[in-house]
Amino acid sequence: MADVVRDPARPVAEQSTAELVQRATEQVSRLVRDELALARIELAEKGRHAGIGVGLFGGGGALALAGLGVLVAAAVLGLALVIPAWAAALVVAGALFILAGIFALIGRGQVRRAVPAMPSATADSLRADVRTVASAVRDRGQG
Image (cartoon, rainbow, N blue to C red):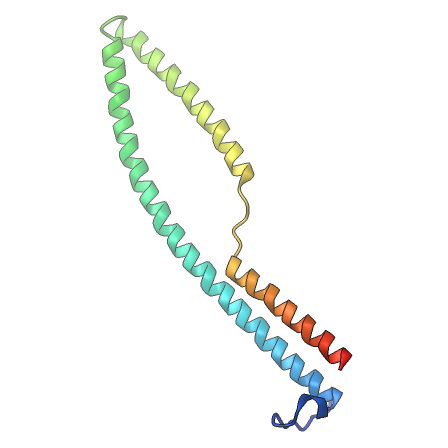
C-alpha cells in the first residue's frame, strides 16, 4: 500500500478510504495486542491463586491422610478385640477399598462436568470491542 499522508486533526469524513483503512488496521492491531496482554495478565493472576490453593489443599490433604491412618489403626485395634487381628485388618481394608471406589466414581463425574477455564474479563472486553467496531462500521456506512 502506498504511504498515506495522515493528519489526525482532519475530521474522519474528510479522510480518504486509504487513510481510514490504514488507521483501522493500526487500531485493530493495537487492540489485539492489548487484548492479548490483558488475557495474559488475567490468566497469570488466576494461575497464581490456583497454585496457592493447590498447595494449601495438598498440605491439608497430607495432614488428613495422617489422621486417617491413625483412625484406620484405631478401627483395626478396636475390631481386634472382637475377632482375630488379621481378620480385623482385612475387614477395615475392604471397607476402605469400597469407599475409595465410591469416591473415584463421584470424582470422575465431577471432572466430566468441569468447564475449561476462560478469562472472562477478556472475553467480555472482546465482545464489547466487536460491538463497538460493528456499530462504527454501520454508522459509517449510513453517513
